Image (cartoon, rainbow, N blue to C red):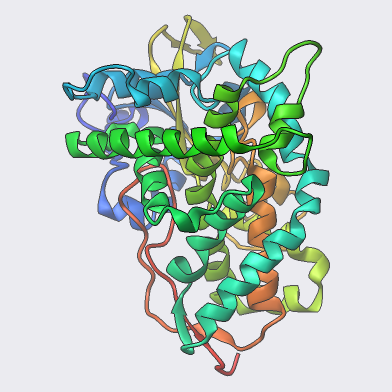
Length: 425
């Protein structure tokens, strides 16, 4: 949660000078449904705003600079969790504490760099391409089920189950024997967006993380570790000199593939299907030229970024082109704004799958903390779009104006997306 500032709530320096206070409320319903007019105004009037006790950066160059610098840390996630976490009265070991101290998303260098070196082999282009047949089988099964009734909600029928089953398939984990597995992942995912968590959210995350650790402990211990092709065995065989991952680290990395990967991939799938069905000229172009598939997914990520915001905290005083950022000050990096920065992208408010530099987007971060599974998420979305909208030409929207989720302040994801099969496209 952003802290109160000494200025009037939400007023930027430039707007104060004009006598026109501008309120930036990233928690508002209006902002969740359409943040882009706010982003545009911030970029135009004050791309380095000081609001609500935090710096707000909206330009592409500034966001890249912060994400590339070791002067700014992501330890805010852990700080917010410990600041807001209620006293459960539950004896140690605390599964949440264990997870955030050891999981790759929360670690700092040198631990973070070490974990990335030892896990990269599981997310290479070659590894993902080798898993494309698995992805296609899961996607086809989901589409076939969705098409049986003639109408379906893309979010519930495809975008939710496909990433979960792909992640499970990569680990050779049968999630069907754990009926609550998806709910456990959803509860634990809130630890990546802790500012809005209530006591009941923490209690659910605590119970769900305990269950995830139990299931993954049993699964990892049951793996033969003979250098096979599943992700756990990839992790087990990874080496950096004499260094290797232990079983506890493999267990946490396996959980993190679900926690960090399912919701963002779900958002990307829903956003992509929606954009193409509401831009028939772009869908027609894609159907004429399948070579644009990956470019189309990149443009979806740029135009409707699944991850809209991330935060950093300064670990030392620093100068930033005329402003001073003090140690301990927070910076809200608006990835969704940076991806529509006119200084980086020509005509950025236009959805254009033939855009040449769409792959420079920041939808999954940048630098040493760019999303390890970003290429996998893009591949899953690419397969869904190809099988649902390119191979088939009988899919149309079946609902009115879409609504965007409001449970997370950092994700841009549809609540539902009704489609009709067998309609004239």
